[in-house]
Image 1 (cartoon, helix red, strand yellow):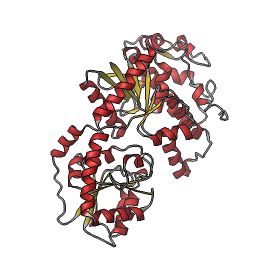
Image 2 (cartoon, chains in turn yellow, blue):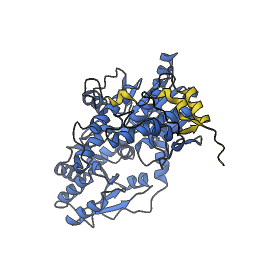
Image 3 (cartoon, chains in turn yellow, cyan):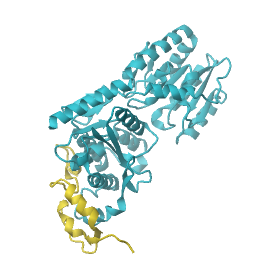
Image 4 (tube, chains in turn orange, green):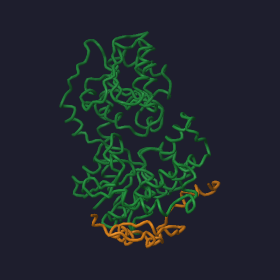
Length: 60
Length: 407
């Protein structure tokens, strides 16, 4: 039996630019709590700056 | 100082970036600093700080990304499979780096543009990030796409523009950005509009003592009696331009046959190159030695070194040849012309020109006093120019300046 403590992935939605609810997906509490403590407050996924190309270029 | 050297690529690996990272680590630690190495694992299943034994499996991070990032929530990310592939792995690097704890380092020093952008996004604000660029990712991939039209990626397609974008933003992340030569610096500024006001040029260094020691271990190969050795240690891939060397040897053979060529390395072009050698009836003159770990000793047996590549930054193979005092014949590709003073520390031929290369080889074979003089001059110059101590001094100065700016 795994000794990982799993929690709802939705708890960590704030790092995603577009938030969605995925109640079926559980993630490792220890790992994601540590990540949330260490990631910058304004960290967002995906990286829309890179994905929108260089300034002045047509958007994808 | 506690320093993190980070790369998006796998570590360890065969190639210049890993060699650079391990040499830097060794040299900095000899001066009392602590250096950690972060990168992808060889099977790409995890990210690891290899010297510490720290690792995090991507399987612990990916389910979150797979659930939250899809074509509906992140359409730009999924506009092309290649974009999704590189970006998702970069986000995994970001999360892994944050997980390992970037606050414990004084300096973060990235070794490629993916790692530069990644660590820029997750590092603590007051942490200096120095970005090294050892080659142009977008340049190499664009060449690959052009040579392989069956892949179906054309100029201005999303993946094409994506690699330009990530390289631009990766290069902008460094304060400063460090290149090994003016060529790379100018390439970033002119072709990728990198307007980073803080780009510094610091050429690579080689540990001359370690190189000498390795050379002294010798080799089981013997120089053929009465023949001069032309050596070409390189990966057998298209970009290394070994077909140009072979064409040059075909021309040379019309004039002289007092030479043999050792091609040292492995790669996907081997069969094609062996066919080319057979087609020119050079089987007795041009030998494929495969991958070897006694290149320093082979250089000691060699009379001429050739690097006829299509594109390269600042290859260690050329530096090692110069340190061994072997006259080098290099092409005009990339950063190579900055490594050689034509006529003094080597000879430079136009890229993809076997005729001029053959003329240079013939000249060196015919003029032994000149070749010996060039050998001596090259060795003296290389010993000071490619000094590891000089490179580390300059790198530490960059680190200290960056730390002072943040504190």
